[in-house]
Image (tube, rainbow, N blue to C red; front, side, top):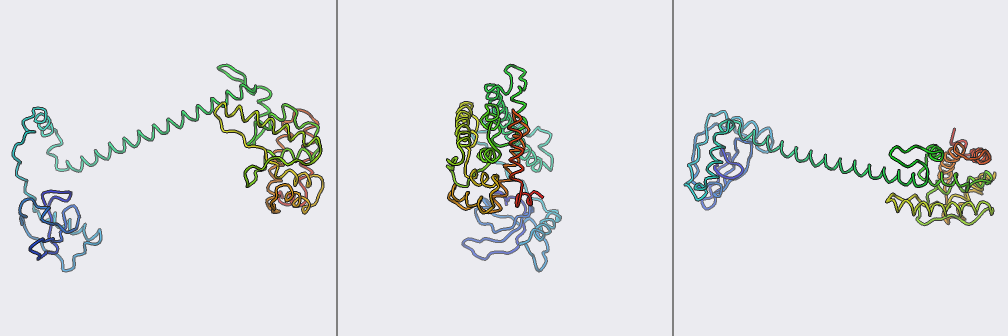
Length: 341
């Protein structure tokens, strides 16, 4: 076969007697098996030799094709070189002629494994291009992280959690922020710094803290207007601080802090006020309009306890720290205490 992707030596496995369009089944020395047509032979096909085939030749498996191709190569039959084409207009171009001479003079031109080396070179260049693309993506990601970090520093500097300048230092407010591990850590720190949660009793504090922990399955679940006047005021102030913080985060092109969600406040308030599990679950139904399973109730209680412990450690006054401690004690009872054990 002198043209096409499968040019080279081939052995006929199954002749075709169709005189109009014969398509014999062949196998090449490169282990390709298929039928060829007249279009694969611009010149009449030449018989270069013969080889003995086994009675049952299986070219449907890779092993069968591999063994037969190896036998074909071991016959010693070589494909004749094609006749040189007549010189066309391109041969008169001095640049093309020079390039052809350089190719022919290259040390690899006469190497028997030249085609294999060419494929290796192609693979090298492809992998090199892919590696460069990956490096560019990694650099872009690194730059994106650096920009995000700079924006966070700018926001924290603006809110006086770190000092300004080339070598920013953590302020007292920043040290308090570092003790809070929450998705809404900056909002919690702002509430502590501005004293929004000061004066709340244990059950009231648990309810207000739950709004920055709990996340309803339904969007748009805001704080629920219930409870004592002091608690409602704390909820309103928490929402007010969240709006301020969200505005600043958007201005600095940062993801905004999630809106406080009051869907669990009534349930945790009832439970921390020494209510029963049934009363707490009914309070959750009344406030959110959807049922809350006992398992979900315990899970959210555990998360509220975690944040209350952080509030206790970062509180600005002993009174708030004590209220957080009592709130944890009031919540950690019954099924919640059993879950912790």
